Length: 440
Image (cartoon, rainbow, N blue to C red):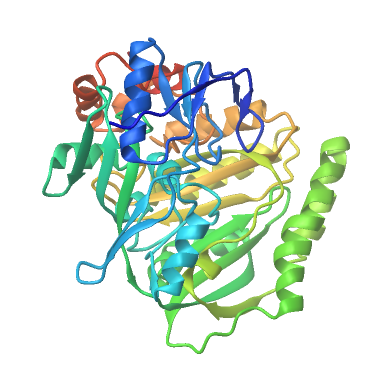
């Protein structure tokens, strides 16, 4: 049996947005599933709780611990590509950007993905990271098998055929059921997507939302608060040829406007909130219509260098437009000054126990605030609207809901907590966030 030493630490761990910090007693960087099992057993002997922290891209304290913090930096790389089953098995600490690039070299791709690819595969799937899609669902819904170390240090594998009750829950497991060490994803031959980005008025996009959703494989839009302006994005499969954004025009849109200028605008807005509505009117008109065609990860994802804090709720798709109109009316009658656009995406229903789209076709409404700007009053007002529509908050984004609320909005909530009781009765993988959202 291999052994791996854990190091005592007084280092503070912080998430990407800087709104969550923790002081773990120990840290470990295991390089294999066996070493993960060893450090989990050692932590149990020392009476320490265990959490894994990937890229820290969650805005909640889902990964925070005062016990043993596992850093998955050495659990990276592709284990196996099965071209008959069309799957890839990958170590849990692999960043999505490395997986996407490696798959592309092999002529393969995931079917759908979110718009950020800095996260580790286990961190992204465990919190329900998603993009937008009419038929294609979250990254977790593309999982075909999982390997995880449970609280007693044993290695457990699951799939639709093997331990299906664990598989149903562990694909979005919040780190509550064990430490994921490997994930098997469904893949397909690489394809081309044509992206069409186009400004549209708020009234037009909300009036035509159902048609835009029905007509496009992937549709999303951003509304700029304090304006009647939106930017829409439609991604559809294409026969090609590839026609990526020009070097200069791509840099202007993706770097200068979306990151560089946006950083300046938000810094000014944070310092002088009264300027935000005027800036919003200008910046909402700065993005022009454009069309380009490229391989999936280059279309779905984009760099996000401006740091922010985010809340996102999944609603039944048919209620999304009404809820968004309520958010717009709330902002207009309040003293709030909001410099970040509000993002709207969709997902089909899936069969994952605690997926935000579990059992229902969903639309997502995401609100953001620039890092360092007070966000509580805005998020509280938005959350009030979302919960009135039976909304389910994204597990990795700011929310104030508790287990009692989740038991109401997730029909299979009890199924998850019963499995947790069986796999982790001593709450080895517990923390304060999980106590709030899952109960004791």
